[in-house]
Length: 259
Image (cartoon, rainbow, N blue to C red; front, side):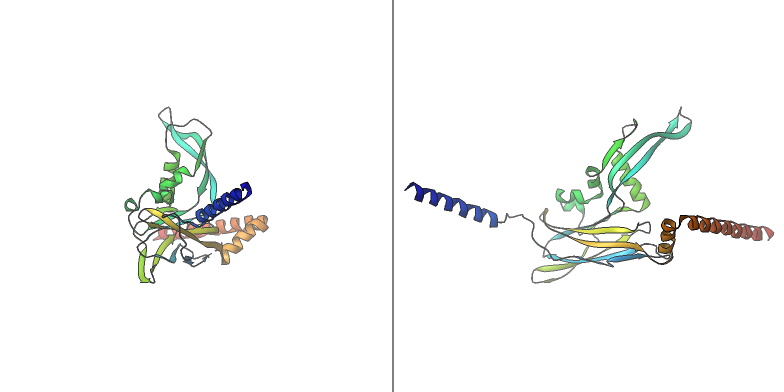
């Protein structure tokens, strides 16, 4: 009798586990179709001056989308400048900042204040919680992470837009979308990622990513290879170019002075 009772209890527990495992909460993340970025490979030649990256995807009808283009995190070393004795501007402190993406571009289908707190981590200000600040010297009470974000925005490496994602037709309950992210000219070669977060009623219901790679081509690639593989020849060539550039500039100014 005890054996039968134990068996029934075990079966009941197993059934409860199975039901719990297959049950999906009302706001659990759902699958969305893979997004696509074009071009998938950014060719950085001598004429490269930035590029518009086109992102396509589909989401459930009635959803919102947030896109983010980011690069691998890296460490940065900054110097704080201040006046010495109220007269001379000098370096007064050092700061090491870790886990800083070299680029971060964000766009959304609607204004962020209409999307709720769930997208806070995708915004530029969300990076403040991700970066690690180490002060090697005593500095005034400043928000280093916030100031770094502002600096990156001025350089064009960080940018946040709203409403740049355009929706298309609805087919079988799924709606297409398209967005253009302007990739800055100062982008470094490397592997990057386009992240898509899909929201409904302020809740993230799906995520997906698309890889993008930036690589040097043509003369910049040859020059970079020479700098690493033959540093002596690279130094000689750089010196010759600098000398000829100086001579040409001098001749131009002399010709203008003659007139």
